[in-house]
Amino acid sequence: MSAATTNTASATGTRVLVLNSGSSSLKYQLLDMADGSRLATGLVERIGEATSRLSHTLLASGGAPGTSRTREAPIADHDAALKSVAAELAADGMGLESPELAATGHRVVHGGQRFTEPTVIDEAVLAEIERLVPVAPLHNPANLMGIRTAQALNPRLPQVAVFDTAFHTTMPEHAARYAIDVRTADEHRVRRYGFHGTSHAYVSRRTAQLLGRDPAEVNVIVLHLGNGASASAVRGGVCVETSMGLTPLEGLVMGTRSGDVDPAVIFHLFRVAGMSVDEIDILLNKKSGLLGLCGDNDMREIRRRVDEGDDTARLAFDIYAHRLKKYIGAYYAVLGRVDALAFTAGVGENSAPVREAAVSGLDGLGLAVDAELNAARADTARLISPEGARVAVAVVPTDEELEIARQTYALVSPEPARE
Ligand code: ADP
Image (cartoon, rainbow, N blue to C red; front, side):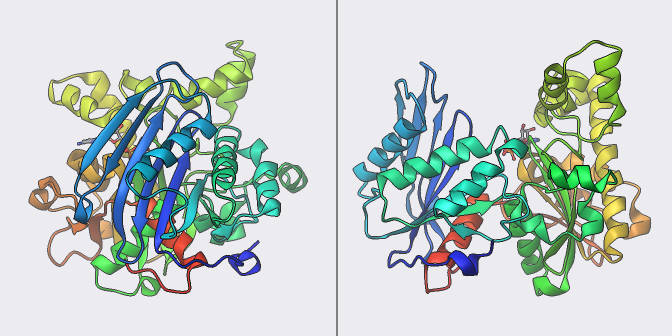
């Protein structure tokens, strides 16, 4: 299903409300695509619990923090959460009925093979997102709730789905398929889908811009290192490989997820340790990764412990960095020629020791960081490789909300968005 077949919406306003609905949270940002500026941002946490909280910030010009309001009162469900958000926005003169609002852009985690582009949502699109629930049981139901609530609040406003998987649908079949029985795989839609696609798309393009080059000419390895973490290989703006698979469990070591393990570990834990499939699921998704290795999943805390000489934290850090290095090498081989390696998300943007460890010893591949540039703190895109390096190493802050707003606006507006 492509944008062209569903692009029936059009808008006069230039603002886009970006919604990211999780199972118990709702994050939002209001952006003006006339200049890409942020007008408001906020978060509803602990939806469905007695301790729900809504934090809303009206931003000053240039996106600087402005006035903030926090409300602590039970919010029963996503419907109530979005109504509260709409009320906060309306109190600032930017409600969902505002003619300046062009569309709502929804982050949807799983778009399967069908959704290769951002898509204006109609009943057929909703049905397809629903059909994908078995491959994204934690995420797609929450995304659907957010969409249905937004539709009900303003049925005339175009709703656009921007899929985490879409950027990866260009992967060649030899990268997307697992080497398992084809019929079984096809019947159950078992293949590599990849996630964090909006971030990989944004960061690979921004990296090319940072080099002053056309994204179509540049090969980039992107390392998105947040709580969840994934790598991608992007050739000329097109994703050719990524580390997350059928679900966001595969690949790099993450905050609480194991990343790659021998699949037989699961049979072993089931047969020999007597664990249930649900227990193994929780073990690998929630109790593994950095947390399982050393009891902490925050890289700041792990580095503090390493600096104090804690051997358990040191080993966790080394396992994390070793996995990164393996993926850099593998994606170097996949691409053949690499112009840039880009670090992004919470760990990638902030942890100089992780960046240093990931490329250490890779001088032979033309990869190195300059110690001073790597240590310098900044919140803008920057190069950290030594002058004249064969491969540029960059830190590129991701901005998934801006990318979702950009893609949404491009679909509903006749005017191209400015970045
Ligand atoms: P999410 O995947 O939840 O969107 P983020 O991209 O915000 O996550 O990344 C969150 C993680 O970033 C934290 O758990 C922490 O490990 C790491 N992080 C944030 N700030 C720093 C910092 N200054 N130094 C090292 N790691 C950091």
